[in-house]
Length: 63
Length: 376
Image (tube, rainbow over all chains, first blue to last red; front, side, top):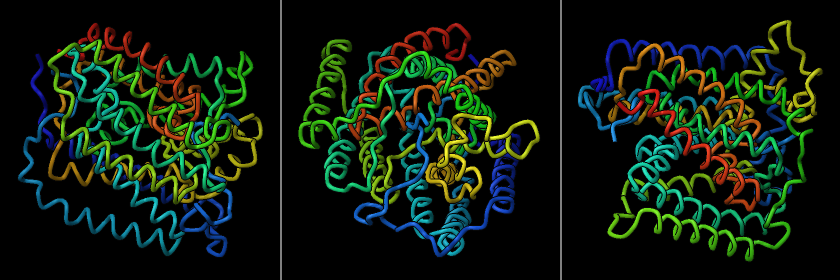
């Protein structure tokens, strides 16, 4: 049986850093290249009872 | 059971104990930035995601592991946790859906795509040792396979969305929502009865004198049910994972010259096209996914996740499984979260079909997992 690799080794830490740098870089790139956010068209904090139908994407959508 | 890449007891935890303070500050800063530059709702949903990540990682709430332990060890504790989660989430969500017209259920169409997708997903999640939420929280905890697998999961989800129309053409009916058809009360009663039937089947399978309750699983179940309900109340839709992955890959593909959303039946729909053009920080599943990653990272600062080293062959198999997981979860209209938890708790019949087929796939996946030596 292979021995477990400890939770934090230098290589795992490096891998985690690379992952987070790529992830944050992707979010920053997306923020820069996407349409500007219209702060005046902010969705309600609580959808329930707001009278505004949700328009988000979900995994269950077929179209 | 020893499992490759599985999350086990903390190892070199004490040295990282101080890591939570800067992470807490970073999460707080992200919350403030989101509140100021995106929207207060998205900032709140980010915190819900962080809570989901903390609950998943802190309680090691793995849907995949729970099913595997039930099958291989006749250990029902993980299943109990999942049944409690489903029952609580349904008890919260169905009355809310009946009361507030703004809230939407996770309604996927019963279809050939669902049958095939759920089966393949159940099979490959055992090989990769993580479902949608499991992959996210283990990636957040720094488990190498899950870190590497996440981009492939996203790519698979995107490819699945490109082919979805063809799979649907093989046969699909309209989504069936029990809350709409029967009302919240009867839908909840039927759901709870079905969950009790599953518990009875499990009782028959595991036999007498088994320990059913584990504090870790129950704590995770209660926390996840409350947070999933918060997600529904705030966002107006149930918790999901896979859509965000597909959107991320679609955004990258759109940045290249080889793909145009207008040529895709799925991404040319107005809602999806709008989400492609706007920041992913406005997307509901993306923001909770980021929160889950952050929450799991926060947990891992004190309770790291050890993993077993994999051979080159196991790496290849694991990564291929991740790609298929992404593809199949798009076909199945969700993973354990979007289809099973959110589907069943909001009264969608597709959630129940998903469970049956994914469990059948899991039975094969467990054998493949053993064959490829992931459990050694």
